[in-house]
Length: 192
Image (cartoon, rainbow, N blue to C red; front, side, top):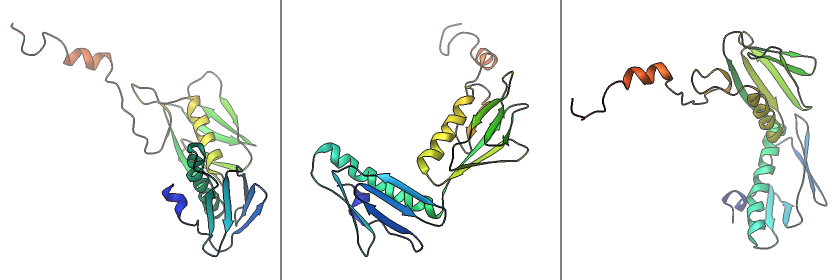
């Protein structure tokens, strides 16, 4: 059994949870989220919180058990706090701006790249138009949109120019000049 799904998921104050057939709706201060639950996963609302159970012990159902407990936990966090992804643009002349419902990126292409911002997601541009803050209630859609933005110009492997997540660790390659300067001559231990 999933460790996460063993205990009931706590329901914070100010949150209402409704179960209608195979759909769970969670409403909080930031809005409402809903999720379809498979028939093999059972949900019950108790005094302790939401209890997620499974109806049999087949392997696919065991895998869904913990996953849906995690989904419900993320929904509760989403309607109370929300989720955020911070991104940075590295490169000379790289900048971003929000126009209407689109994110416009100038990242070294001949024309700016325009990305439509999905409903339920907010994008804020800060720090001289090089820092993006993507926020929203649904963890999946925030992560998916951030990955879509990063895929427009992923960091290159030599200088790290491109769009990356804040605190993302990149392993940069040394390049030709660094490789030839340190590797010239015979290998170590070879006779001269």
